[in-house]
Image 1 (cartoon, one colour):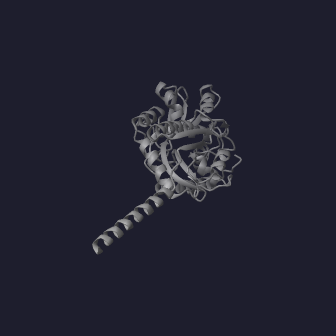
Image 2 (cartoon, one colour; image 1 turned 90 degrees about the horizontal axis):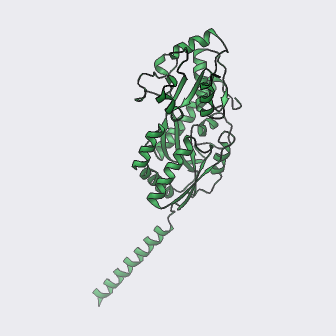
Image 3 (cartoon, helix red, strand yellow; image 1 turned 180 degrees about the vertical axis):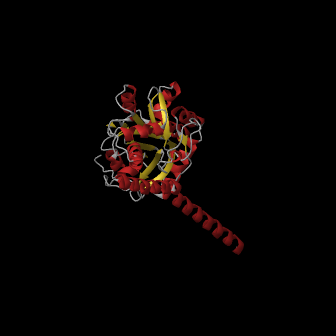
Length: 326
């Protein structure tokens, strides 16, 4: 009888432990099946394409429904603020690009990338390249800078959008070279390249994906990249640091962040979803086509990357005296 009672008690205890464990597990926060990714840019550009590539793959792998919502406006501030105010349950995410940290560096937003958001994953990076028309008299970066010194304010160096990472790179060059070149902000890199091809501007600081086809067709000439090392696809193009003008490198990045205070369990599940999608052949092939380079930074590593970007752009803005209204 004593043995039987002990056995019964042990079974009951085990059952209670199992029920308790199930209860704890069932109460743990779970990533939602319906997710919205806010892209604070217009449809069809780099950030939008990256978001849609991952949305499709995550949906196929997990059966989740991911909707892309384009919320352009205010230099990406409108869409970003919307995510910052969203419920931190993983149902609303943000596709973050350099403007995410530039806005903070220029103090033109109400949010801060560090305290108001939770880093999920850095998805891709791509270089910035300064280009001229293939028939331009400027064969090298030095040719362009020399001409700018000889003809103050006569040459134009342009980019898509004011106070962007592309604009920041231009101002770094102008400041370091002590040249006066007219800056004209366009509504995007594609319109800026159109102005270049039409002979209306001298040079364009462009993201790599926008000019892949022109580079392949050799209708434009790359003069310098703003990367930390030469690109395998453009081995003859020097980096800005290699020109001896200034040691500066910056890539355009695309990543995912969630509202601040998103539960760690949900963050972990989100990271797993994006990592799984990144490993698919579909994403790898699409990235190659778009001129994007994958990244494996997630969680704290992605957060540290963002912190470094904020500090770097704040210093650039200070050194080049770049204001939010520029």
